[in-house]
Structures are given as C-alpha cells and as structure tokens.
Amino acid sequence: MNRISPDIIWQAMIETVYMVSVSLLIGTLLGLPLALLLVLTRPNGIKENKIAYFILNSMINIIRSLPFIILLVAIVPFTRLIVGKTYGTEAAIVPLIIYIAPFIARLVETSLLEVNPGIIELAKSLGAKPLQIVRHFLIPEALASIILTLTTATIGLIGATAMAGTVGGGGIGNLAISYGYQRFNTFVIILTVVILIIIVQIIQTLGSYLAKKIRHQ
Amino acid sequence: MIVFKHIVKEFYQKKKKITAVNDVSLEVQKGDIFGIIGYSGAGKSTLIRMVNGLENPTSGQIIVAGKDIQTLSPNEKIFNKKKISMIFQHFNLLESKNVFDNVALPLKLRNESKEEIDRKVKEMLSFVGLEDKDKNYPNQLSGGQKQRVGIARALVTNPEILLCDEATSALDPKTTKSILKLLKRVNEQFNITILLITHEMAVIRDLCNKVAVMENGQLIESGNVIQVFGQPKESTSKDFVETVITHKIPKDLLDFYQKNKQSYTLLRLKFLGENTASSLLFQLNKRFNHVESNIVSANVTELEGTTLGIFTIAFSANESIIQEMKAFIKEFNVIVEDVNI
Image 1 (cartoon, one colour):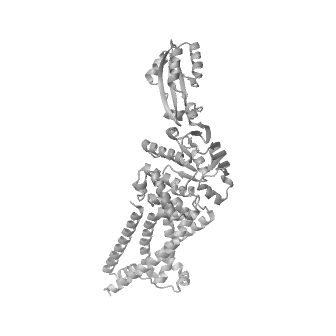
Image 2 (cartoon, helix red, strand yellow):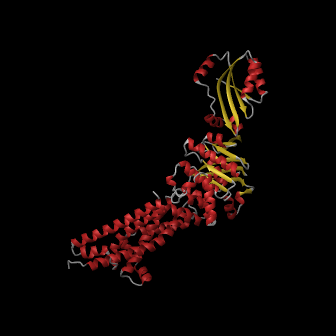
Image 3 (spheres, chains in turn brown, purple):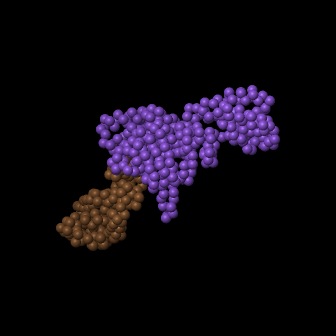
C-alpha cells in the first residue's frame, strides 16, 4: 500500500494538534506554578526555602533526564490510572504532559530570573506582598519571554508526539514513521516533513509576533 | 524624621566577613534634604536601604517617624513603607507598562478605586511635566523623562520621606540639573524629607542643606552643607569639596610665588553666608594701605541660598603685619587659613 489518502493525513494532523494542545495547556498549568515556586524558593529568592527548592529542583532534573521514549513506557501504570487505558491518543497525552511540564518549568524559570532585579527591589520598596510581586511585577515583565518559551515548548512537543506512535497516539510524526519510514515510502516522508516544517514555522512566527507585541518595541 | 543609632551591617562573602556599615549614627530632620556622599563601596547604599527595610542592620536602631522599624509587626512595616518612597539610579520602570500604569502601580497595590488612581496619576504626571506622555512606554523616553516617571510614581502615594539612590548618576549634567530642580520643588511644595546618596558633590551643592561623608563604612564627617563645604576636616571630604570648589592656584602664579616666598605670604579667606567679601577687602586695603595685595584665586559658590566665597590672596608684608592682618580679618567673622606652597 503505497498510496496514502488525504483522510489519513487530515486525521493525523487532528491527532497531532489534539495531543500538542492538550498537553501544552495542562503542561503549562503545571509548569508555570512550578517555575514560580522555583524562583520564589531559590537561594536569595523572595520566599527562600532550601528544602522545597532542593526537592523541586531534583525532581525536575530527574524527569528531564529521562529520554521521552523511556518515560513513555516507564509510566504506563500511571497512565492507566489516569486515563483508564494504555493505548491511544489519550494514553499518549499523559506522558507528554509529564515530559513537557518540567521542561516548561525550567524555561519559564529562566524567563523569570531574567527580570531586572531592580524591579523586585522596587516592588519590595512599595511594600508589595509575595503574591503581588508575582502578579504585578514578575509575570508582566517576563511575559514576552514566557511566550517565546512556550513557543519553544510547543515545537518540542511536536517532536515528542512522533514517538507517541509507540503507544498508539497517532499524529503526523507517527504517519512519517509507520507509512513512510517503515514502508520505504519516500513520498510520505517528504510530505509529512513538509507539513511539520509548515506547522513549526507558523507556531514560531506567531510566538515571535506575540512576544514582540508585548515588548512594545 | 530618620534616626540611625550605632548602625552596623556585616555580611559574609565567600566566608570572609565584610563590614559594610560600621557604627553609623545620624539624624535627618523633617524637611531636610540630606545627602550622604561617598565613593562606591563606602556603605551609603546599604545604609539608605535600611530605611525602607530592603536591608536589615546587623545591630543598631533605625527610628523612622518616631518608630523603631525593627520592632514593627509585618503589617505595620508595610504601612510604614507606604510613607517612604524611593527613586533609583536605573529608574526601575516596568518596560511592559506605559507611563500611566507605571505611576498607577503603587495605588493598584493598595486597591484604590479607578477614579482615585486616575485623578492622582494625572496630577502627578502634570507635576513632573509629563502629562502628554501617559500612553508612552519607557523605551520611548529619555533618561531624564524616565526619572520623572520614577519621581511621579514615588509621590503618588503622598509619602513623607523620599529616598534617592544615586538618582542622577545615570544622567547627563544638564538633565541632572533639571531633576535636582524638580526634587527641590518636591521638598518645598510637599514638605517631603529627602534622604539621598550620591558620589557627586555637585548634587550636594545644588540640592542639599545637610551632608554626611562616608568612607569604608564609617561616617567621617557631617553637618550643614555650608559648614562642610567651608571647612572640611577630613581628607576625603576635602577631596569631594575640591571637585566642585577649586582653589587651585594657576601654575604660573604658583611658580612666581614659590620663587618670591620671602616677600609674599599667601592667605586663604573663607566667607560663609552673609559676610560679604567686598566690604572686608575694602576695609583691609584701607587699613593696611602700604601692603600690596594680589588675588591669586577666587571662587564664589551658592549654597543653601547664601554664598560661600573662597579667596586666596598674596600679601607682601612681614610676619608681624601678617599677624595683625589675620586678627583684623577674624573680626569680620571670616575664616583665615595659611596657604603652604
């Protein structure tokens, strides 16, 4: 079977968009608070807490050091617990979230640390409480950088979804591997790569545009 | 208004103990524009940050508006901070917010109503002369305009004390002058006590009524500006004064008087405040009309609304006449010093 129908491609695109958007959304919801905790509890942070920082920091490092394909298999029991099955698109989303949340946490942490220390000093001089510092000073000042960070995370996720085929996740990347690579169909490989390039270009352009708009430059 | 009592601040850098502030006692009175001057690393920055709790002293007491700030509860501390505002060397404006929102920020933290915020912010922007820039973003402003925004943001909460952390050090001389003028207006119009730190003596000269000189964490000299400028005691103070009031003798004159040391004696006369130079010089020349007198260098500076005149004069007279002249000069309440060349 060398021919590939537009339906299959369309279906794969839907699967990719579905996996990426759900795991990006939940990954961000988990990653942002983690990043804030890292920044607040770090040595000389606004709410310095050595133990909390150490635990959080090590956990993120451990998860981030696992190759995605290993993580995917290793957490199968956990996946079953959460979504009730170990195969299919939903089953792929669980490891994708666990993969991307610490990645987002680390990248957003960097964005937050880049905020001019003078701004934190200003916030303290105005008597702002820690939550006010986060809301009125840290996040607005880091927002443009956070958007670029999330753009990077999204593109990283698209790469990771290709491996989601292992647990039947589907998607464009899976199409490239199962229809193209494993069946020696060069056309499918080229087609899927072109589609991926276009998606990545669109996401990056959108991210850069938004960041630029927020920076007021 | 602000009293520092035996303030010590120590911290450790790579296990080495550093004493940033070493037993400093100081009093700033209500309505003062008090300047602390020192080279970088003198400890002045650490000291000013203790007033609003950005730093805590290792030992000693700080009393702000009658309250020992270390004994305050966290809530009272925040309340106290609201009476104290600060402006910064690098302005610390939020790049993501426009001028209006930057100035509104302290009021937003206090959950004031939109109408109140609108009214107060507009009032302050017009006070600093930026009413037409409210929609601009910080990166569209010049350094001087950025500091004006910083000042508007500091004043919008009606503080009693304004702390200025090297507020003009990132600005060019012309902009510095206009910001200093604005700070003077802040002090006069709103009766706000200003405590500033700087390494520029010109800032002290143009703005302050009191000055303290810091070196290696210690306070080496303090007093009214006119006193410290007229008679600096410590060598660092003298160095600072010389950056704005030079009584350096021009080289060719110096050569001449060095060669003719036998026939001339050089005296430095300092007129502080109301003493006018002209009357003394006239009386001096009338009384000692046989003595040749040449002005070698002269400098008149305006300080706190009065003048400080420093004249170096060469007199051709013998030792006993010189003593007589010194006594005569002192009768006019003018300070007279020997000049060694």
